[in-house]
Amino acid sequence: MGFLLRVAVNIVAILLAAQIVPGIHVEGALAAVAAGLLLGVVNAVVRPVLLVLTLPITLVTLGLFLLVLNGICLWLVAAVVKGFTVAGFWPAVLGAIVVSIVSWVVTVIVSDSGKVVIITRHR
Image 1 (cartoon, rainbow, N blue to C red):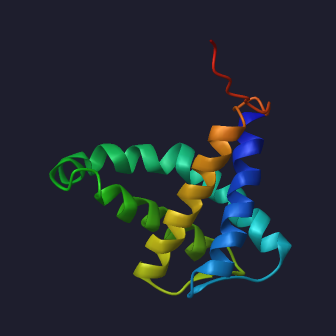
Image 2 (cartoon, rainbow, N blue to C red; image 1 turned 120 degrees about the vertical axis):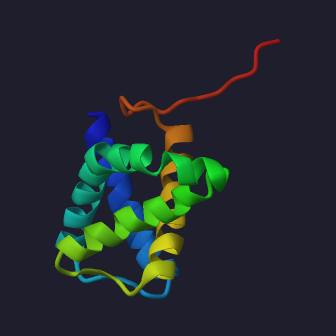
């Protein structure tokens, strides 16, 4: 259930990034679904390997290199999925920022199991 939720969030985030960021284009719902699914797989399999390989540069840049790494992952997905295009490095980084923000907001509201999280303050 958690992976499917992440894929759905990725689809929405990619569509939003295509609306906001010049240089990112999605041609149809099928391309968005394929890109969201592949981005979920890339984030689960490829990104951890890249995180380990780029750990020294990530530490030197105080974590800012993670934005570049996320952009590279989005660019990789665009290279594979027909109908999803990213025009260059900066659109990839800006698109990755949009995808990260959307994912963060949804993670704050919804748990991995799909349940809405309500935060209350105890007195």
